[in-house]
Length: 499
Image (cartoon, rainbow, N blue to C red; front, top):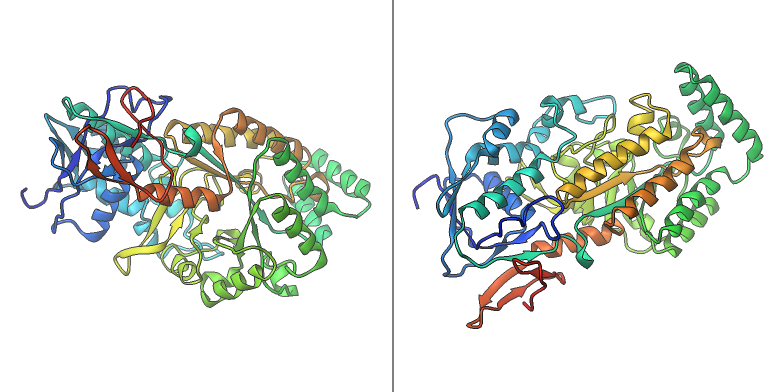
């Protein structure tokens, strides 16, 4: 092996295996990753990520293999160039080459190295979406890294001769894609203030008929149980479809200043909040932390807020920042130190799409330390208020159309769609037609047959799938696989094998 090359050993992939809509499109390929001192740690991590997304199963065997070589390129290709060059992945006779520029692109986007180095900030100290690589390239609605991983697998297929092939189902139960329904609990108390702010928003936009509908709904409610009815509506819609979701809950002490800023607005120990938490937990749903504004910089608060929430509910393993207030490098470090296993903050506030270029769970990278973080990311793809608040789209029907379009994109790459629906989207709180829209969303997703579960379960399974390894090939041809997850492996004809 020459300097500047990374060799990956892979078994054959069948011709139709990676076609979209195939019965099993994430695949186990037998491979061995050889060390390459010329690759930077972040580039090696990017290569590991591509291999993981294409579901290559590491195995340091001695069988005849297809080599994958990482080759140095003189230029640093932009996204358009990579796409025009088939992602810098080229099949040959028993060899596949990957331009090193692709690994650089993966580090900047999926590893968020570009964001970690950015000094741009909006009024919430977030890196603006306009400063992120995929928005700059106009490709934020494409999971480009997931697509590149599929291209890698297809190139191996094209380069292979007669070699053995095994496939692993991408998600449990034979499902080919996955969905996580999530909710940010921003409102419990002081609901008239939120209705008033929403009315001002509608009036400024000239939505007078919609504003009148809000006033009528608020008056009809009698001022009682407005938030509770909104939460019950969401839970009822999920119960009807037999699905469970993830709820991110604020857990700090509210003050007039925090409420005015839209930060902490309720006490987790109040009778109203306890009632909500009890019904969520009682339905088998997950409860995670909605980190307050201060946690973005004061990381000691992560542990304090997590401990406080755990005094009320089961162990808390997931976090999402309120208003998505996060700095890509520093805040996740604090999350990891706070004991969280996953975050779900990476997404856009003012548009919908794939901020990290992936429709999947992925490990986070610390650019300053040059090492992986001990926390996974489940980036969200779609949020209701990205349209109604930032894009001025007030028709809930259009929100759901957008959500389902992105869900179909995730399905096409056998990925994970994570959506955010705020339970305060009810007529009395300013959103006529929203409850009916959410019912349509849940029912439409279920009809597409994904694996639906709380994020805690999806992240745990996906992390376990990442651990899968082939450890031996027996004389009769059967493979021995070790994995922390119960994975289903199929042969080239799609038949489950006894591994």
